[in-house]
Length: 140
Length: 109
Image (cartoon, rainbow over all chains, first blue to last red; front, side, top):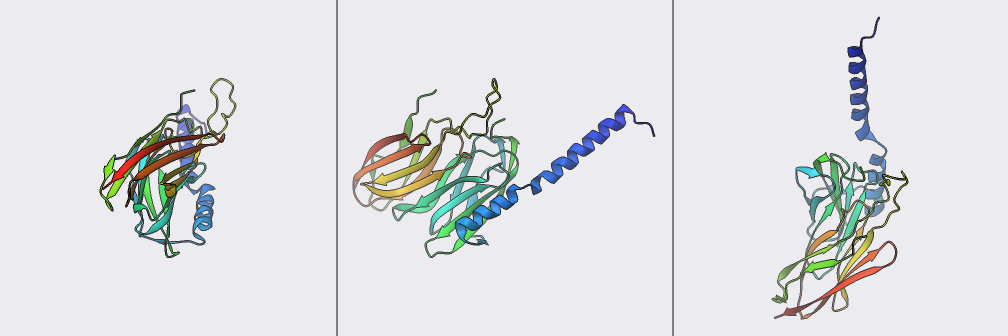
């Protein structure tokens, strides 16, 4: 069979697409799980944590994120699709009016943002929320 | 390098027990350690603010650990309930050990 130029392009595009599709199952999934387990001492149940984030972030270099978990003493934030999933941890005290905080984070691509909350009674909770990113942050 | 300047938005007066919102912003490049220099192709070393602490009359009110995924010019917002007048002190700790701070007085009635 003779390869035409058009065939080559189709093949290249196909390979690229396949490569991109296999990417989300990358090594950082393990890193995310490890980070959650280290922070919470096991996999926490889902729910009880709110993540405020834009559905679509045009600029991944600065994405506004708000976290809230009623009664939490600390909330850890992870970006599951970043080269390093860790983002930061908020620590609340009795002086805080509520366990709510906002910041701005970097997202390399469209991905899930994960928030893990440690409650005053020792229990842990988590939430996930997808944020679509049109222009990636993290270097570039 | 741009001068590192902290800015905070804190109400001057508050009612006792009322939730007040504190907004903070510090100008800092938050060099993630993953960016390459466009000329030399070498990695630019990591230099970020890694810790933020807000204390009120010497007692910790709120703190945050920061990692390279925090955007440049870190913005942090949180809320507090106060029962007495005093001074809120904000401290940002840099990777190189420098500490940037600012203080604000709040009158609680």
